[in-house]
Image 1 (spheres, each protein chain N blue to C red):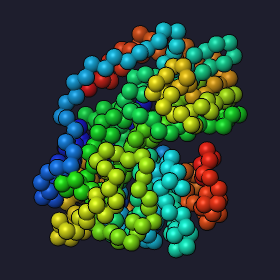
Image 2: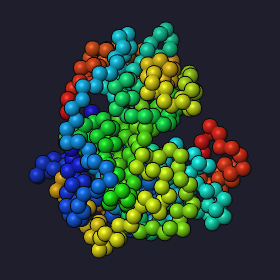
Image 3: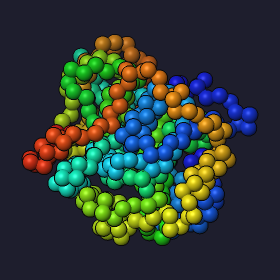
Length: 164
Length: 248
């Protein structure tokens, strides 16, 4: 990984010998991470899911995503009435040391946000497809859903990413 | 994908990284610059800011002021409090702090998995359990920023403005600031040895192009950074009431 190579180059350049405090990150992570992927949902390559029922599209992040992020400590959500665009960020999720954008799979208007996430952001980890839902959108172009990944394609996408 | 076509092929196959060096720039200005470079450009950047003024408290995106900051002394001494756009803990930064920030395209940095986890496994910067640098990350669809504040030196009195956090990594072990931090100047001959060393290391992995900050700042006023300076009124409201779900 480029950054770890930089870190050890920096250590050499600065004549720092060993940090001591924490073990260095492993050179190669071998993990068979089995995340849940639900049929009947659609997915993005950036690890969001969407459930389309009638006039409402419910959006959240996948089990794969929450597993990689680690413990979620905060979720920044939009206001109801806000407009979202497919592929663009609608909020961000903070986990330990990183904040990550969450992108909307569809364009439309936010009609409801999951206010439980303010007090209990950990629902995103414990129940990413149910209680950890983030926003409900009234889609402006339902046809956008057709270009999203189904469960099988999304699973393959995750396997390819994790194989790095 | 957005990153394609935005990075020039380098002669040695290394990605291009633009280097901005500053000295004493206010941290609010630096953070606004970082957000703008992250969100409105497609280049890889390294920003080095050697020292900052005035001494400023910088909190992570979701930090609760009443839990992390001693508000009365802060109001009394008029210490600025900034909420940055990345997560992580609270620091107080001043002329003794050296900042190193990377802003990169996920696709341009070969071998780095496009998911946040790789960046997040960076261990903290420490000599034998004593921390000399803290870092935080923010990740967008195609890019990420990893920024670090290094403690070249620090003023013990400044630490009194910060509370011991309730939420802390294991290694903190509930230690007071002075018990778990150390000063880099006790391990290294000079600040420039450090910053030159950073740039030397960078050149091994990237094609480094020093960039004048003036050329970077366009008249693009449409972009509004989310990093904000808390006003005196914000702090007084927090001090006088129980800090609720409403985050300032």
